[in-house]
Structures are given as structure tokens and as C-alpha cells.
Image (tube, rainbow, N blue to C red):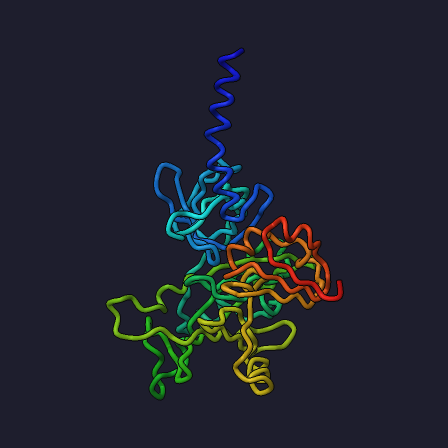
Length: 331
């Protein structure tokens, strides 16, 4: 019995540094986060993730030992962040779940036959559900579910538009327009096989070929303009995705916003993206998703954990316990 107690004591002592490091990094066992990410297989069933927001994600523990990594596959990863890696290279985590994403390349559309195969059926994409993550274009869309035929969703470069009069664009060219953007089209084909049931689809397109390598002489584009046939707004709707403002914004609305408020608006894809490198957080709405954030993630994302609460939705005592500098209105 004494030997068992001694072994348990040594085990607890060994765990103390790990628990302290979690506290030092602002994480706790209750913290939970997610990210769209690219799988990098290391062999023998090992892997790490390149997260769009979190950067390098190293799974040092897992609740999903059956997951089989496929190198280059896109996933939505759910995890408990444990502690930051040395030198700020990334974060070590406990994996809680992984959902595989449809991962595709950008295709060329050069003929009428290809255009017919890609289709151009209306598609419903809510604002904010198309964004750039790393060197990928991510899309969440709502679809009418098929009876039997799989639908096709493709991101294409339209090579049918002539460069010189009467001549199609050369295959493989990047089609950077005079405005500095890569122009693409999101094509959807239901093959006329739909039901009255709706579902959500997610897809991630690899844009790596549109970014220059150190050996290339050309510079990166300003961003991407993606034309869709919108179920809500009709054919020819253009979504603008700037490299420095990666969340898609309808071109017409962006132009109107620019006309009214100038260049001083930055769009974020979620609440954590909104506070990236921020010196303070000003809360102006009491939406449900703002009530229970991951405080460890917020503290890691911000330059300093300062919150100005204009709606009094947080408990000052709890904020003090979490190491947050907290100001509220009217209390």
C-alpha cells in the first residue's frame, strides 16, 4: 500500500508542471476551440494540422485514436488547447473531433461542353460563409438534397472568354484582371435531381497555384473575385475576397460601404478573428455567441485581455479570476 501511495505521489508531482504550463498560457481543461485546417501526415499514423487561424496544431493527446490522416486533406478540427509551443510556433492540443471536408482544386473551363458539365444552377451562400483561410477558399452553402445523383460544386477559371479577338485564353494562365484580382466562378450542378429537403455543404478549394513562390517574378494578386448564381440575388453576383480582408463581401455592398465610410472597415469571419492582435474588446451587442467565449483563446488572440462591456453580460468577479481587465457600463 505504501508503494502505491508513493507511486501516486510521484505521478502527481510529474503532472504539476504540465498543469502549471496550461495555466500560464491561459488555457484550461474546459476551453474548447475549432478551426478549418489542412492535414499533414507524418507517417505511422502521426499527423499535425495547419490551422487557418491557429497556425500549427500539434495533437499531443486525442479522443479520436481511430482517425486516419490523409496528407493535404482539409478538415474541421475540434480540440482543447493545452499550451503554446516554444517560440510561438503553434499550440499543442487534445483532439476532440475531426470532420472531413470536400477538398478540391480550381479547374479550367475552356469549352461549352465543360460549361454544361460544370452547370450553373442557383446556390444559396449566406454572407460571411465564403472566406480565405491560408491558401484555401472555404465555402459553406445550403443545398436541396438529391434523391440519388451526387451534385457537383466546382470553382473554375473561365477560359472561354477571349484574350485576343476570337481566341480563348491559354490553359494554365492565371487570368489576373486589370483590377489586380483573380476572377473565378463558383459553378453548381444539381443534374436536375433535387428533393424538398435541405442540407448544408462545406467545401475547401486549394488556391496555392495563385500565390507566387520565391522563384517567381510575379507578385501575388490583391485577392479574388468569385462570381456565383445566387438563389437570393440572381446570376452574376460577385463576391470579393481581399488577401488582407479575407471574408467575402458582395462587390456592390463593398462599393456602397466604401462610398459611405471610406476604407476604415475591416470584416472578420468570427469573434476570434475580430479581436486578433487587438488591444481591447468593446462589446456592443448581447448575442448568444458572445456570452460564452473561450477565454483562453481570447487571451491568446488579443495583445492584452481588456474588455469594455457595453451590455453588462459578464460577471466582474469571474473576469478578475480569469485574468481579464474588465470595464462595464452603469454598474
